[in-house]
Amino acid sequence: MDNIAIKVNGLTKIYTQSNKPPVVAVDKISFAIEKGKIVGLLGPNGAGKTTTIKCICGLVIPTEGHIFMEEIDINRNLRFGMSKISAVLEGNRNVYWRLTPCENLAFFAGLQGISYRSVKPYTNKLIELFKLQDKRNTQARYLSRGMQQKLAVACAFVKQTDILLLDEPTVGLDVESSYELRELIKNMAKESGKTVLISSHDMGVVESICDCVIIINKGKIVTDDSISNLFKLFSTSSYRFEVLDKLSTLQKEQIQSQFDLAKIVEKDSQTIIDTELKTHDELYNLIDILKSNGSKIESITRKEPDFEEIFLKIVKNEK
Ligand SMILES: Nc1ncnc2c1ncn2[C@@H]1O[C@H](COP(=O)(O)OP(=O)(O)OP(=O)(O)O)[C@@H](O)[C@H]1O
Ligand SMILES: [Mg+2]
Image 1 (tube, protein in one colour):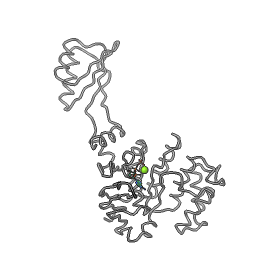
Image 2 (cartoon, helix red, strand yellow):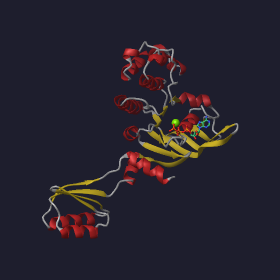
Image 3 (cartoon, helix red, strand yellow):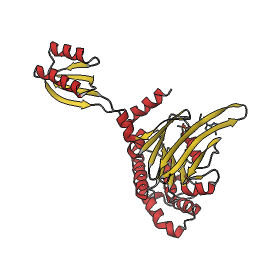
Image 4 (tube, protein in one colour):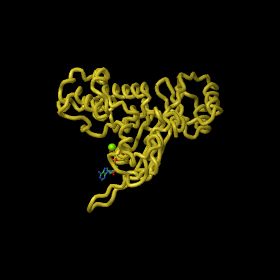
């Protein structure tokens, strides 16, 4: 338990509204996040990501279940829980609109009991890293949506808590800003050993910065694994051979009879063979067939799935 930053045990949230049927947003989920890890929280719209994050930061009271930080149940000691966490929630209401970026940073540091004097060099560094220098003295309500979002993440960092909860932090950012922000989150979190739980629909963000990923669907966890394991699990045995010239009729017959699903396409002076090869022997057999008529192999490539495909496969199988 020593190296666990957050432990979620049997968390359930049922929203009840008068005249409407109750909604089970989160259904008995349990997971643990190790200290210093960046964990992605993924799932389709309505899966229960925001609800989970809000329960962890004490904004939504769970219907059932417990959330522990350093073995302390945060529902029994919310003040302790809050001292450990900074959160950036969905939408653009994470910062004070009538305060400038500098004032917002000073305010959020102050909430954590950090004096303005001691945090000033850090706020200057954050303003620079998040490229808000030109707007440092402009009220947040006059910043662009992307700048407000960057400021919200900077305000989460300025509190210098051990744990960061980020709900879709890159939403609405342009490609360059999204890339910059994810690199900043990764580098700053790793530098200071922060634990980060980040929800995102951007698979690039998850693939490039997360150590592990928790996938939820309809309020239940369907996967909780490291990114590298998921790639191993879903690694394919699909190969593409590019061969110079056309194949002989005999070669084509041999390939079709030995490799059921092989597709052979002839293009000008090139032949492309797409096939599944499950063993090394199958790979060598195919090479032997090609060699038998002196065909020249230009390239052999193995098709790896991207993270988006992995995510869709997991979620579709769960429907
Ligand atoms: N305050 C609320 N009152 C009633 N139902 C709610 C409330 N907040 C969320 N829900 C419902 O709970 C379910 C989970 O919603 P949640 O916002 O946690 O999903 P999400 O995974 O964050 O989705 P998205 O990817 O769209 O942000 C949805 O069916 C949603 O309609
Ligand atoms: Mg959400």
